[in-house]
Image 1: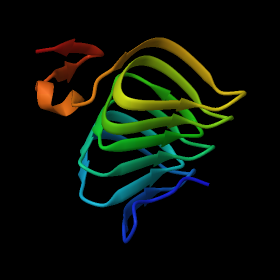
Image 2: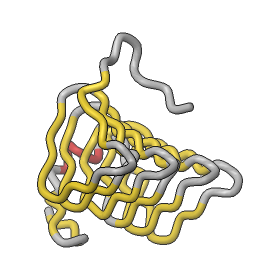
Image 3: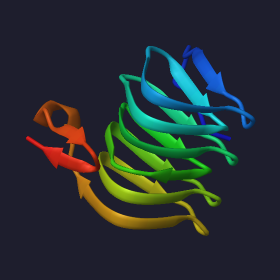
Image 4: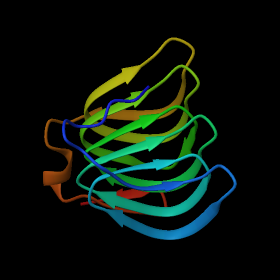
Amino acid sequence: MPKFEEGGKLSGFIDKETGISGDMEFKDSFRIDGKFKGKILSGSTLVIGETGVVNADVQVKTVTVNGRLKGSIIAKGMVEILSKGRVTGKIVCAKLIIEDGAFFQGSCQMDLNPLENKEKVENGKTYK
């Protein structure tokens, strides 16, 4: 089970029967068990549950994937791909954890301060 930051709250939740497309920003932790397509921006934690399917450019503090994510991830902290997680795309993060059984196809750049580089992500491409 993914860990939320101490004292962290869950800002929102997308249920497995729900699909949303667009741009999303949230303050506290957010969980996706449904489908999301677009852009995600937050200074907190994103959790993609086992039934979650995300096609997005993601810029967050930390992300835990136990479902499917296609797109780019820029995480100031940790990216964690759990055993049932599937990630396809570019990852820029300070710490990467991939559990046994997880799938990752793409590239990874380890960066202690990825959000401070002021990279902009559009259509799966990263610009400085």
